Length: 223
Image (cartoon, rainbow, N blue to C red; front, top):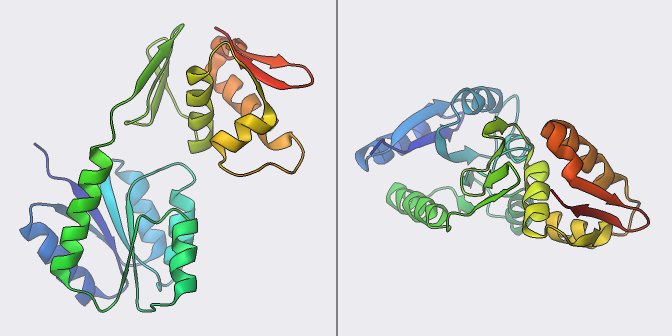
């Protein structure tokens, strides 16, 4: 089996080497980045990266900015490192989609154990595949296909397509869709959901017509 790739991002070379040595000793392949910009470049250049270890305080782009950018289209596990143990930092990290939060100084052995536990937890998610009328998704791989041709979707577009597939034939209100896909109570106008549906239809080509507009309510997926 191929080694799992870990991207270690920290502006301190000594810290990167310490973490790298312990991870390599445990059988992982390690990629390093010294700042936020380099982290994004290396992450998007190699989509086989299994997990990020991300420092908060870095030049160019800090850890929060890097996390926010990556979470736009990826659910790769992220462990955030920080020299500060403030509750507000930890809350911000979880709001941005950080999976684990470790304050410096830390034990490298504990960090490696956290890496292993997080990778096992994310790998144990039951594989879910849905396929209807030439439209298919693999939730585990976060991939979608139209007539066996892969299409590139953002995180929310993918979640929206999965929700439609799971609820095919059911008329869904905009509020219902937003509460399930965005996970918050909806108190605004309908432009958020309408914009995402429009983009999703466009990327689905002819199959986009399977997403029917239910006037005065929302949408129904009916291939």
